[in-house]
Length: 247
Image 1: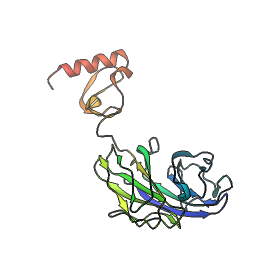
Image 2: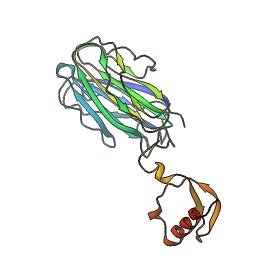
Image 3: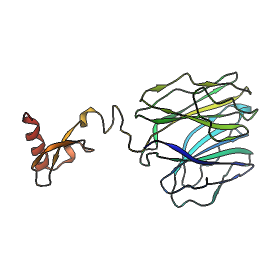
């Protein structure tokens, strides 16, 4: 399923209140981007996961949080430890709820133009690269080339691009109007996407025979989400027997 942005919202101030984007339903995945004027990160909101924090002196501290929507309130109140902040939230559809991030998030900082987003390596097709940037000292840079503008709030913004084939995304930049920027890369996994290599779905778990509960092998094959050692003895024997035949 392709990822899409349902809606976005913004908030500002000390202990800012930010509304949940309009139309958000259970199973959507919410991303929250916050930059504050301090070197101290904001407190992770209850029920959210902190993905990355980056600090750059007078450029402030940039935080990225994520939550799988479930019975959402109308809004969230942030604990910014007494500092002022600008924040933005977006609701994404078509994101894998079990593994929302396709790769670990990374951060870069700088004191000169351009903003250089950290490289990140996706492992499934059609993942989104979220290019998040903030600079408390000035408005962030423009939208990177070939990226789609996302939520923006004065000194923080998050743009995106769909990465059709799994691989490393690098060399992404945008112009900077400030000199103390923070940039974070997040790779978001599409619902139902299968990693090209590594993990549960790599070549070790290629086409498997369909085995009935009785242990009798059928002619068709299907991709299994379970390794052999998760099967009972009868099913393992049937699987071995099937592979030994020339079919």
